[in-house]
Amino acid sequence: MTAPDTTHATPAQGPGIGAAWLLTDMVLMLGMTVTVKLLGGAYPAVQLVFIRCLIGLLLILPVLLRQGRSALRTRQPWLQMLRVTLNVGAVTANFHAVTHAPLATVNTIGFARPAVLVLLAMLVLGERPGAARWAATAIGFLGVLVVLDPRDMAVDDGLLAAVAAMILGSAAVITMRRSTEGPMALMVWYTVAMSAMTAVPAFLLWVPVRGEDWPMLLLVGTLAQLGQYCFIRAHRAADVATLAPLGYLSLVLSAAAGWLIFAEPITGSTLAGAAIIVASTWWLRRR
Image (cartoon, rainbow, N blue to C red; front, side, top):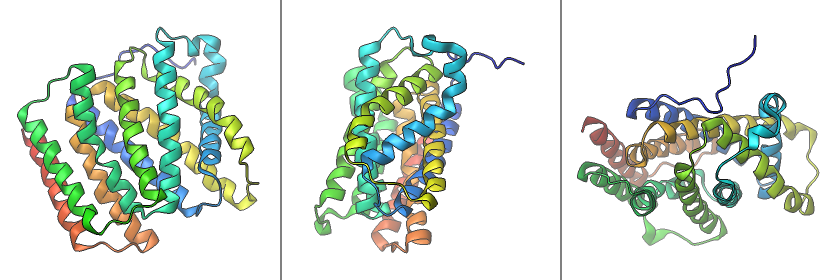
């Protein structure tokens, strides 16, 4: 039986559907992040991104073989190139940050993204979030500040990489929302173009991969590819202002993973900030 062509299908839409896709993406991406951190910085970040993209190419190979060059056909080539370029920077910076800073800190900085997203969506996309969404986003951002406690934060390359990943990732989301392509076309472009863009720097910095590390690298690529698809579907189903505060929930998941797997302490400020974040998300869903 021939698989249905979902490249140009109209995805189901609605806040609940978007939230479900985003929550699935959170779990998948947390698994990917934990796996990258378990590798312990043994490989350059750009090499990990390249391997992740190669694995993604294998996963979407059936689509490429079935559709050929039409899988890359787009009405907005320059927008797709901009989106992929921003994602190369964001993912590479994030992989570096994960291996050089505590997991909870990296993820917490990433959750400044919803506030940036709502602002960029208003300026670039013309979205007009209501007062309740602005309030929920602002309260969630306050929770991030409580967790970070900037008074005691030391600035290093891991922290700067996390900030860069957050800013570049936010811009990439906005370019994705300006695109009129379907979810499958977006994912194909993302995977193929990122593989091409990271190939040369990965080759120049290449560190031979130990045999025992390949299963974890395969897991990184698989989780990342599935997460990317869920992320695209989420932002096709609901607007940024609805999804942004929900993203704060993964802060709780990352703090738990850091504690359980890496023995990173959960401080009082982490608990207080997480409570604020969860409350802001719950309030938004009740509005």
